[in-house]
Length: 211
Image (cartoon, rainbow, N blue to C red; front, side, top):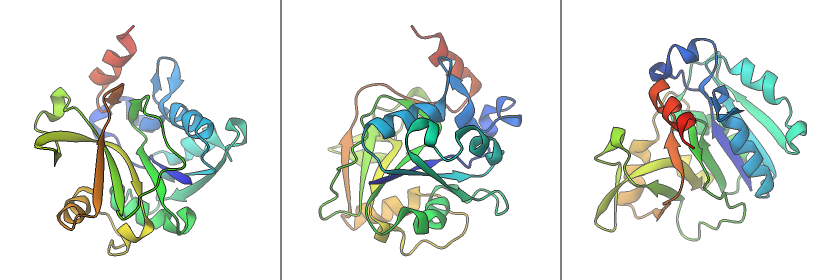
């Protein structure tokens, strides 16, 4: 199975740190955020990682190269001239690299110990979303599951067909997910271990200050 790390966002809420670095290259406990994902994906048996590039994306490519130093192949979907296409648009553009089989997508700005599964089977669904308990900055949650609201972790498994009606343009993922939920094309699981959305300098500091 291939994986995609979403890394093209501007990171406005993370300024001024993202004025000079793309958000996935910010360090948590001395290591770049994106390096945690790549190391975990590599050890979990993924065959190739696709990374989309937007704001200061050349710095990500300079840092990661072809992935050989991590022991995995890395390919790039370049949005630097298009402007960031947001999640759905970015995945749509990367589909030629992702292929015709199910793949994993993870946001490049989350810090987690979730165990990625290179053998995950979607069965009769088009996507499987990983949910977490609602953090203070998203107290109302995103999706209803078993009579409770949860926050989308930014981690999901997708069949390429999920994106067949997505136009190649700037488009968020949430509306397509909600439409698929209504059609009963989505399955869920709740992850209850370490997960942080590293969305602001304050949240980054909180994580780095934890023991």
